[in-house]
Image (cartoon, rainbow, N blue to C red):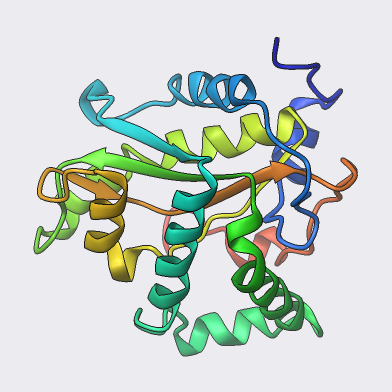
Length: 217
C-alpha cells in the first residue's frame, strides 16, 4: 500500500509541482513502498532510442544520508557559478524571489541530512568532452524520468527539489554510494519528504509571449 493520491487534475499537477525546501517535513518518515511507486511511475518516461539507461539511487540510511549531505555541502562551494547575467536579470525581476531561493538553500544546507530520502538519478555512460548533440541525447534520456519522479512524488503528497551540489564532488559521491563512476553519470540530488500541507499554487512566471517564438527567434 502506498496511500491515496492527491485529488489533482493533470493541469493542477503540472502547475503546482514546486521546488520545495522550507515545507519539507523533516520529522515524518517516507514509506519505502511510496518511493518505489514513484520510481515505478518514472520508468514510463521516454528515453533516447528507448535505451532506458537510467537508475535511481535512493538513500534513506541515516549515516549514509549524513555523509552524502556533507559531500553535497562541500560541492556547493566548488561548482562554477551557473547564473549568467541574463539569468540574474530574470531571477531578480520579481522582488523578493531570489531572497526566497537563498533562504530555501540555506535551510537545505542546514537540514539536508534530516530529509528522509535523498534520491540520485543516474544515466549510463558519461558526457565528459562529448559534443552538444551527444550530450543533448544523453541528458534527454534521464531528465524526463527524473521529472516524472518529481511529478509522481507531488501526486503522492511528497515534496522534491532539483539540486546539483553533488555534481562538483560526483566521484566522491559515487564512491560513497557504490556508483560505477566510469560507466554511470549522476544527474542531480533530489531531497524527498512529505510536505507540510499539500496546497501549492502556480508560481509567478514570465508572460508566455516573452519566451514563445514562432518560426524564428
